[in-house]
Amino acid sequence: MRMLLSALITAFGVLGATVALLTTRSRATALGVLLDMLLAAGLLRLTGAQSWTEIAVLVAIVALRLLVRTALSADFRRRARDGQRPAERVDRALPG
Image (cartoon, rainbow, N blue to C red; front, top):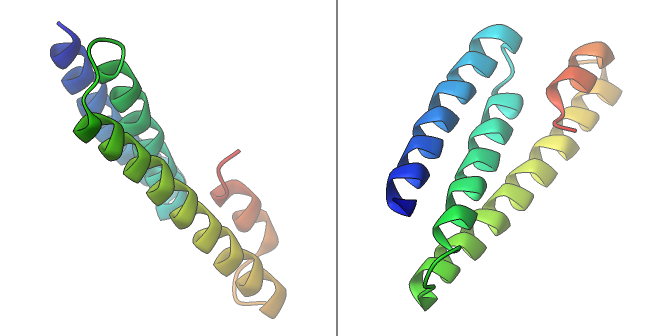
């Protein structure tokens, strides 16, 4: 049952990321949605019996999400400061 719910959340994450990309035209927002949903699916999988492999995958997802968000945020701020991208688009592109 946990695996089914985890797969369902992952599928909704892909769907949500696609919708976010199409509506906001922001890859950063879409990637943030996808990584958040993958994190939720990973946490759900850990509610039962945990293995070290599952814990390692979850840690990797969290680390990847933080790394990508930090890199994208710094890049968007730099581009806005350099005048390459309007500031209002930067605010919209950064996940909460």
